[in-house]
Image 1: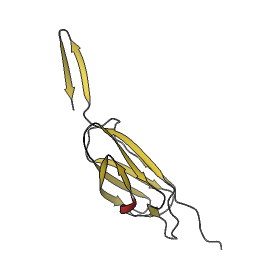
Image 2: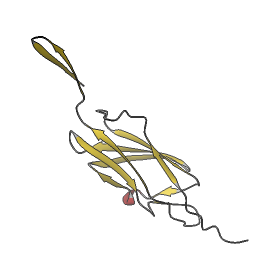
Image 3: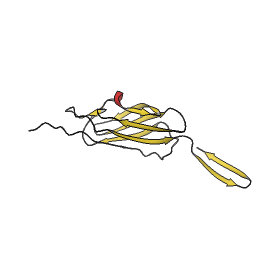
Image 4: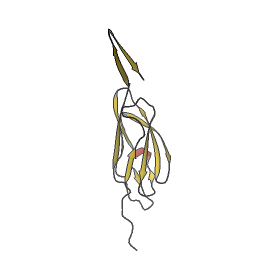
Length: 116
């Protein structure tokens, strides 16, 4: 029987609206095979990884944004996860705009803004 050399594929998703002001940001990583995630290899731009839970095919990754009004990108580069035979995951990423959300309504002669 040949050895399994198929890479696990990841689908990154989120139920957050985009843009959002929810913190921490919650992302779901769903893999095509059972894997172990190496947290030190997960990359975040615009924030910091603060938690990983779940297994063996579905994980929740929590990211704390580094500021306001910025694009937060979570990347699982190749090798951030691997299956039991050592096959590295195929890379994947997801981005969400984080910051203050305003709904502006114009009432003559005033402009009223409601920010979340």
